[in-house]
Amino acid sequence: MKNFILILVFGILPFGLKAQSIPPYQGKEPILKDLSLYRKLIQKDSDQALVNLKTFIPGLKLDIRYATRNNFMNAKMYKEARAYLRRPAAIALKRASEQLAPKGLGFIIYDAYRPYSITVKFYALVHDSDFVASPRYGSKHNRGCAIDLGLYSLKTGKILEMPTGFDSFSKKAASAYDSLPPIEIRDRAILSDILVKNGFHPIKTEWWHFDFNDWKSFPPVDISFEELETKP
Image 1 (cartoon, helix red, strand yellow):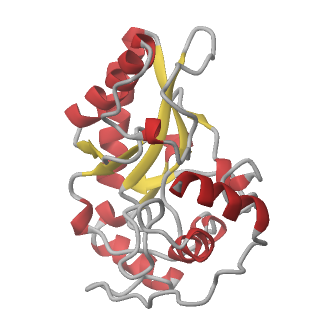
Image 2 (cartoon, helix red, strand yellow; image 1 turned 30 degrees about the vertical axis):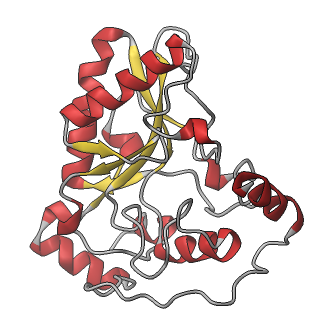
């Protein structure tokens, strides 16, 4: 029933209609919104830098859905298709990618760092923290420490079969759901095993979502991709 209601919400409500009752941010760390303060932070600690994954990891494929209308919001949320992670998380993902390559596989990225203001917009529509992060504490995506991804064949470019598509609200999207064809269970396990081995952990509700283990070391950020790419 919940999934049916969500489908109705996505199909009927115009974007932003449910903006009322957004919980205020109550996290311990202030949200980093100022580009100059971000630059000062990374001067002191280079690990705080948000690294552009496309230029950092060879063979990485991007399918950033929120830079298109092909997403549950039915709206373009990002102006550009980019993916960033904090430097230690990016290094860990690169290491995982290098371990995948001999198997003929690479990562396809659906989302990574997400500005906090985008999390607020998601919650305004869905209003259900089972499916999207509550603005009260933000998302690990806001910290640059969460990655949404799948696998593809380096030889053919074909996406490997997974239980659902990205951002599905189906019960099949759960990381431990097992009433699936063997190939989908196998491909999901390949993805999970390589990421867990390299310092990420899955969440229960989404097979594609992995959090970097050291996420608590990084504050939430609300700086756009365009700002991140500007030169000092």
